[in-house]
Amino acid sequence: MMESETYDIYIDEEGDFLEVSFGISAEEGTTDEIEEGIFVTRDIGSDRITNIGILGYKKRLALLDKILDKFNKRLPVEIRVVN
View 1 (cartoon, helix red, strand yellow):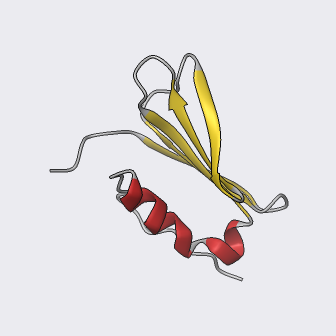
View 2 (tube, helix red, strand yellow):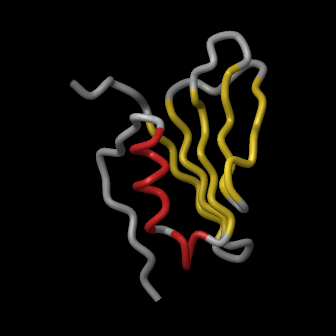
């Protein structure tokens, strides 16, 4: 069963950065670069994942599905890059 969450998607086309936020933002969070250019932010108190970011997303968007699977997250939309 998919958990009910609010999703925010931020895209900085000029900076080539995509960030997906899950639910309420962390009051205090910590961000780790889990692979080059892949960032995961967790709430310090609950260890809940609040954000996933991809630097250079235009060429690496396929990684988003793999990262979401790794953390058992799903989006109710498909994200595509259109040139």
